[in-house]
Image (cartoon, rainbow, N blue to C red):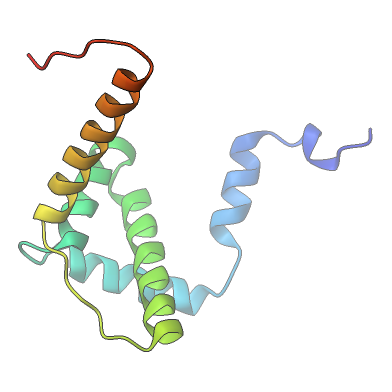
Length: 115
């Protein structure tokens, strides 16, 4: 067997990946994620509740903790303060994605009408 991961089921690998790493950092990030999920009108809370629909509360907390970690890394890397984007950020991003996809279809020759 040339591939060692070929014999491992995906759910086993996923459980290994979730449990590895710095446990103290994981617990702190989960606490921060829980606190961020309780705030009102923030990007983090709206992202959390959007993720809860898909993956459940526990996995959404881990994902939000990872998002907080990425935000903290970006702040330390660029040395710029954190700018809260608000809940409108996700709506605006979705509209921009829709416009981009419509434009791509029109360039390919399709006629797109909004209902």
